[in-house]
Image 1 (cartoon, rainbow over the protein chains, first blue to last red):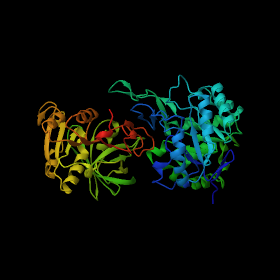
Image 2 (tube, rainbow over the protein chains, first blue to last red):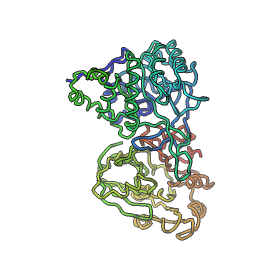
Image 3 (cartoon, helix red, strand yellow):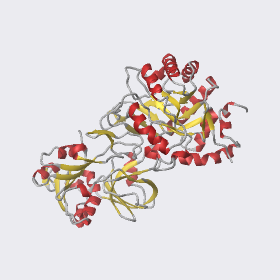
Image 4 (tube, each protein chain N blue to C red):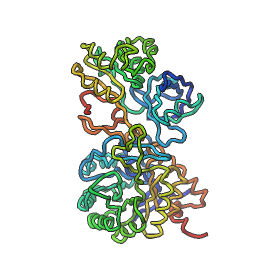
Length: 307
Length: 245
């Protein structure tokens, strides 16, 4: 029997597989496909204080081994999520929920974290400082160490729950951002969000997405994510990392763990195959046996050690 | 929604860029005309959403227009190819909600779901009229198939080479008794039909770029009078009164 359980800042997950924010809604679309309780946790759709309609159409473009999206944080707003989604989730999923929280100001980040303080099932706040598809008068908070630190400070003071900052890959040195978050008391990190990209429509000779740019996800970004998880693990070895980016198999999940992740988010794969997480979870014991571990948590950071 | 392996039984080219594909497999998830399937293609990350033209217990008939790389490859796959298909996606046309005298209106490849729709309306004792619009005679397809079903087909072509010269709206205007349509076609056509003052109701099937096809990614959201709606999960068929342009 392989022990698949993992720990994230004091929160136990029965296995390391977490559907990634923005590919799983608030769980409803998947409740008919499989029993949600097989999941280690799930990260809900990035939620802002106010409802957001998102960006104009088209919002989706295909790429080699992946896709661009420019959804633009469409969500019903925190109040509606607390009223409509949190009770639904409690009925259909009994594990820890990771709340992906977005904001357009330090105050909004703090307010959104405070709003979730009494949502008992929300065990981890995943603070999204890296959405590439919204324009709040400039770059996102995750694009430099100072603003990443400021968000971390603001949310740290606003909540008792573990805080994981979701980092952007669209930076020169992600390790520097990770250190800035760690210094301000982040309990963990989640990386990576999508890579900024663009496609041009040859019929119109204009960008294919109405938002012009979008976030690249899917297997195309996997090696970038593994490298960044590796770098961040080296920079802040004490902080648990949720590795995210292009994972579509149990083998890829194991690579993420070996690079330094304690748990793994699965994103775009859910959109191509709604049963992707279920298949990955079922395949994990076999991969662990192949790698010679009885406890999957022993894989974390394994690639950094020994010869 | 069901995931299953379908076998491509045969393909038939109908026009320069429209093909008929027959797939065998488990169609139990398909419940209404106007629903779609999402087909995984080798070497492509996203599935290709294709409207169901018709179905029976043995399989699906799809009409596919070559629009890009994916659909170009799909229509050229050899018979016997096994395809991973998500079926039973979306909400289709609601025949019970369509009043007697409702007219089916299709533009180009939008004619596809009207076949399964017409067959089921006929089975329900209805005898709908059908208006199909194409650019030109050489772009027209499925006229014999519709006639064989037993529906009266009126056509319009932009260049007048088949049926009335003009658009489906020009034909609709000659039918002042028609106050309700069940329509599928390109957005400009849907919009023009929707704007006809003679209509008091109708159902309109939309098209959108989408990633998942089952509501998870919210990539295909449109604004409606009832709020934000996903074309894939809440549609693709929307009621006239809910549609905003």
